[in-house]
Image 1 (cartoon, rainbow, N blue to C red):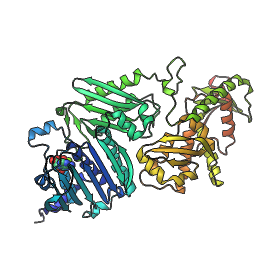
Image 2: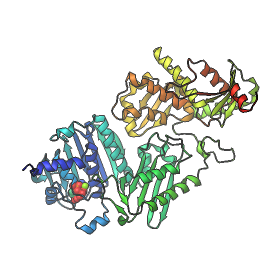
Image 3: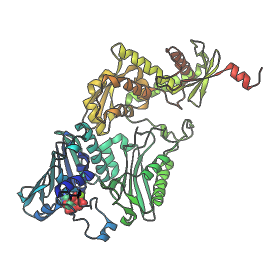
Image 4: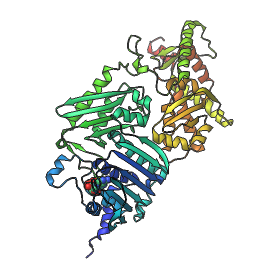
Length: 574
Ligand code: ADP
Ligand code: MG
């Protein structure tokens, strides 16, 4: 006989692996419990990204001594009692296995004062071995402490990432639940530093303001629809606030943050034509429907759900989105310029701009007009003369051998990148110091990384001062890019710069090149942006002065040529 029954504690440890993947999963389960207990305030403390220690304090309904004894055992829950209850789950938890799983793979301590009781109790479980509850001191609510996660599961412990990466994941979980529950006050400390404090607020908009800054909150559009018992509410960003990834998109179904491909697709479709590919809106969308319309029991960590009628839900979300996006915003199709008669809401100043930016705008508007007047005065330095721009995107150029079509964004990006590289090689990127520092409001996970990498960023010409929370003052920026970037706003570019670092990488020499490329891309004229003829010519002259103007370092073509001969042939001119 080769089959043996697994020892209970071993079986439990194996099972725990499914629910508890990393510190972020512990955080998620504990926060869900606190919310289910009706907490109005939740304080979170993490140490070493949660690997060393996680402490969560809530002021919810609490547990008595018997509850404490039971709650750490497997399949124990106060949230459902019978089969029928599975059909109408109104709580975040219901599987009755989170605390037992955490207890099996860590050192766990829970202290709780049951609502209305006079004595608090505590229970300790060490790698699955529980001591009976004993009296302790605590005001109403519950504190859960989890230390040394996976100390008895070395195979799993080895797979944990750096504290910074673990923090990043935990932070994300917290962020999402904080958006799902604006009526609850939240605070987060990491390694004894305060990361954020978000007192209870009335609505989602205020919560987004707390987490993303007031400027972002101001650029949000509320959405709303209510059809056949499916209620959709929330807000999405207007097209000028965009993100480089989907991280700031959240769907909450009956209060539970979930991932859902179908809904993600609906959101992406609503923004088609409003945002360039690779840009994503910020969105928090709440969907409330009868508990019978959703199956929440399809994923061990409850991260996904299943709708009884996914199409209907998608339709209602889609309707809410298209109403919101079309009512207040008249948006030109991609690459097309909005006519002056249409409201110019879309090109309202991007976030993160100070007075300096506005002044620059004025100056620019004037020079632009001037340039139009001086149309004739375009000076051609080489042997290429610009004819004009096609849809503000492709420069058409008369070259000695025929017609050349040049992508203005790629060309500009290339010029900026090469110049920056040369400056870095020569020892220093020359910067422009802002008279009035530019205020940046950044998501807090980005803020963490920025603070840690300040010196490295200064080497590429970005000088920042942390101002508390997600606020930074940008004092210097590469001089070559400052003017254009002021026009576009700094937040997205700075946030995008640290993108590769969010997963624990360090800013080293090797990625400086990549950094420069991102900076150059951020400041390069955009496709669809109309340039005065003189600037078009300037761009071409500068491009031609580069060593290899024909392709960018990543192999994308910059110039597409149609020879005179080819044109002649097409028109049968032989
Ligand atoms: P579930 O949440 O699925 O019920 P858990 O293992 O997460 O399972 O928790 C077991 C039980 O412990 C819960 O049903 C709840 O009654 C109790 N509990 C857990 N955390 C708290 C808390 N912070 N405050 C009050 N009760 C709690
Ligand atoms: Mg739970």
